Image 1 (cartoon, rainbow, N blue to C red):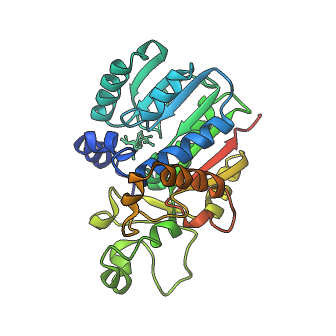
Image 2 (image 1 turned 90 degrees about the vertical axis):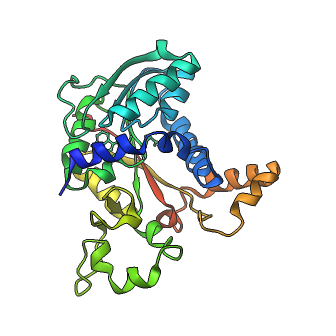
Length: 282
Ligand SMILES: C[S@@+](CC[C@H](N)C(=O)[O-])C[C@H]1O[C@@H](n2cnc3c(N)ncnc32)[C@H](O)[C@@H]1O
């Protein structure tokens, strides 16, 4: 079940951690670099962009600096407060059209076809769990027909790839306590983590790249590209952080992550999947 009140309270409490997430270590920086790479490739040259599930506004700041007008939406008042503060500090408030505290599943305050591109990055579509169909319908509705929709979600197989640092034995033996899956059935192409399984952040849906494509196509979108972040490195590689003392090695890592982020054989190994689609032309 999707629990909007629980989610709001989780992200209100998460506070500044979300601002720091994309900068505090190499792992977060890879996600940030790959996501910006995909945005630059697919965004229109100018226009009005919706940043839904904007968090503390890192991408909104980049977009505003690039000259776009940006409307920020988040379910958490605290994330929006941090975003407003950070955007104010960077001097790009003039390019922000609005800050709205809304659930992505209900954007009824926003008119149809309001935006030249719509973003929902960093997992709001994972956190809404069963609400994802309502959420994607809303994101499509507020986008201009035929415009880019860029969404990122948590990867099912990429998350499993990270098992080792968790208590893998407990996870494997008691898998039903952690994810909503009955091991006597076939393994699904998307599944929900269980509330209360504290290894997993807020409860969420994990997606395979195949399901991501199917889901967007079911809603009439044409999928243009699927990419993944943190595809060739894991956050739990011993010594990964040591690379940062060498700027050349760090740059090479970013370059390789961007190079390989769309390779079909690797897609499902990344931790976040980023899908780029064209919204239905009507
Ligand atoms: C992990 S953060 C990502 C922030 C930013 N987009 C990024 O990629 O760095 C997820 C954000 O989505 C927001 N969120 C989660 N569920 C949401 C919902 N149903 N409606 C709107 N925002 C939501 C959270 O409050 C949080 O700020």
